[in-house]
Length: 450
Image (cartoon, rainbow, N blue to C red):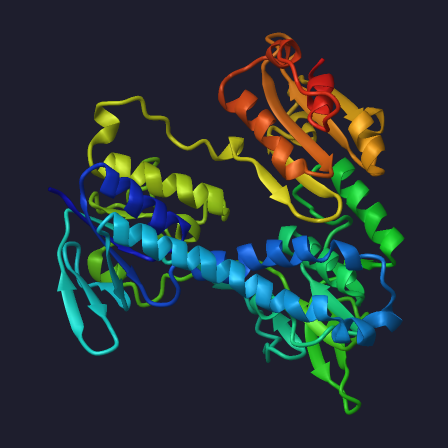
């Protein structure tokens, strides 16, 4: 029986542990913080929980903040968010127990290519294994000019729920996390100003997609400061903050939130002692997720591919398959990161997968682009929300689906259909020939394919 030692009980480590156990391995799982992972249990899940619990507050005005603080439903939000996270952790612990996965609470560190030590609360353990998996996750990035205090100057993990509802919050970072936080605080009734370092939010997304979101932000009264890069923050004598930008612009606000990415938790892992190669803190891996030391693997945020829980889960499973030789006896596909779906839980939701229209044109690649608005959907009309569209990118010669973008209600649910088409090599005609329930929002995906 092979033995696998996994450092980190986030999505990557958990999926690797459960898969390896099913394949007959003895698994030891090491975690020094929280079962489920810091980024997942204290960031990803709480953020989606908060956003999901707030739709009834999206139209409130700044003057209503004090009333909302006294509202029982709002006061319950923090408890509900914590309850969801706690339940997920409890479920994982029960699963590990049922699968006889040994869980050690402590900090794991490589002492060489073949030895790993674990510092627990009261002792030091030494472990050997046939395979070692590093999946220690990441933490929020903090710039040199800023010192978060958890009260006024916040990291994302400080806001589920926030210590108080801000009168005016400045959010630094207009990527996925930044726009989700913008939506969340606007729904809470705060005045929000989003610093956009480029010329539109979500700079890595289709400009047409970003435009729909910016239009919704404008209707909410959200301020967008474009071409702005923050480089300082000061506390004023009246208790407010002044946020400075590199171009000289200044903003006065009650709170500041940083949403500028993350850093890998690779310090104190013993990478150098074990001879594991890394770059900028990220472990370098091949398509099997192996490091340069063949029996040492890495996954999740630690490898810096795509920092998504869905990707981490898939990576964990792939590692288990490879480490235990399953790839030699069954069909095995390497992860194609360019075909991974991504969703943004704003209002409206945004989701995309595969080739983007702008990238196709910049590469000089000929594609067929079809777009259908949700205004043609009977279900959207029934729900009273016709914002957004479905866009399908396909090969004009073969008809294969290459990419897709969805902006609208439940986009995160519908993008799975487009992802399936891309990853299964389906053509637009395959989608056209399929049938859907009527009336549903997903019908628009089929219409866009047609």
